Image (tube, rainbow, N blue to C red):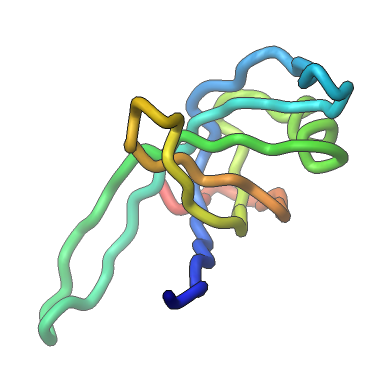
Length: 106
C-alpha cells in the first residue's frame, strides 16, 4: 500500500479551540483554516476555496495556541479520518509557518 500522505495548505485561521491536553499529557489544539486561491486545472484557471479542520500536537500545538482568527499561516502535515465513526478528513499539522502581509491564501 502506498504511504504518501503529505498536505500543504496556506490560509487564515477561522476558529481556534482552547489548548487541551491528551490523557498522556501531550498538548493538543483543534482549529480550522480557510483557503482561497486560483489554481490551474485542465489548462484553465479556476477559483478554489475550502475550509479544513486541523489538529496539532506537542510543541506545534503550543505555538499555534498564540494564534488568533484571521492570522495567516501555511501548515504542513498529513490527512487522517476524524474518528473511527467519522471518515471526514482532518489535517494533522506537523509544521506551521506564520505568514505576514495581507494575502494569506484567502
